[in-house]
Amino acid sequence: MKIVKVSGDVSIKRSVDSGTEEQREAAKKIIGDVRRSGDAAVIAYTERFDKVKLSSLKVERSEIEEAYKEISDSLVSIIQEAANNIQSYHAKQQKASWITTEENGTILGQKVTPLDSAGVYVPGGTAAYPSSVLMNVIPAKVAGVKRIVMVSPPGEDGKLPAGVLVAADIAGVEEIYKIGGAQAIAALAYGTESIQPVDKITGPGNIYVALAKREVFGDVDIDMIAGPSEIAVLADESAKADEIAADLLSQAEHDMRASSVLVTTSSVLAEEVQREVTAQLASLPRREIAEKSIEDFGAIYLARDLKEAIEVVNQLAPEHLEIVTENAMELLGQIRHAGAIFIGRYSSEPVGDYFAGPNHVLPTNGTARFSSPLSVEDFQKKSSIIAYSEGALRENGAKIAQFARLEGLEAHARAVETRLKKFN
Image (cartoon, helix red, strand yellow):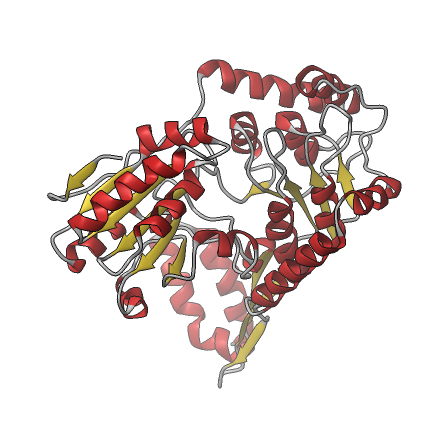
């Protein structure tokens, strides 16, 4: 990792991948084929990309029961405890409908309604992600979504990973399909013979999944177009170099395009972390991935003082931010842009990934400047409530008509005035 002294604006090197023209066209073609041919297209693409010939798309209850036999009771217990923590945290995000009545009889309010249905995409391929199941499903459950559909690409044995199925069962998913890629996104958005369409799609995936989500947005809602994972660590001389290096590598091992950054006021820590990252890489099972990530998207920024270091962090607007300094909690108020903030030495980023309770679906690519983690509100919609009384219309009708005419909308004005005439 290179050590760079801060001077002026700092821009993190990120991998923002909108796909090649060929990839975009491929995603569009897959979506079109699924819209036209339904299950047949999904099955054909699953055989082509996942090397599995499916006779049925849906996961049966017997497969879930078999999954419980494949993992230990202690792991089932851990998944359950994590689910409980996530449920407890998200329950605090619930928003209630509200109504107010003013003196002139006007009734105004907001009605909060859960979405009817949501689709959750769980990645497959090089790893299994039970945590993604919990983080996407539980907020939807807390929000009150009645129908939650999960899709995930099958392995070459035609099955989903045991941990993913157990997590889905614990989270309460009753509809699971063994499909992935752009074809799964198309099936969720537009439906097939086997799958009814949903109102919103959440969850990360490969570039084809991301492009497909972008393509179907507008016909359905989506959570975000997620980029590669990011971590920034804000640290001073009190931090332990081996711990900071381990945290940086925890994100680097995700993806060759992941970004791991240290922002520090200590030149000694900077050099120690630089050495530690190299040393720890040597024994990392996913070394090739992590090494490429660190080489291309890793950096150590050396700031003159904490004020400058915090400015750097706010410029970066990282997905994950660790604050590992003396009196770390006192710096919280100065952080404006970060997806999730981990405070203190013992709050390593994986604590949030798996167990603490807050959501790990976070804004990437600097979008923490204006975006938030996945939450209960993402699975709800709000309707405004307006009930004007006769007295309120008498009081304000002429003003409303005048405003309408300012915009050149005569019919708007007359819609109010036709009622005002009847008051005379």
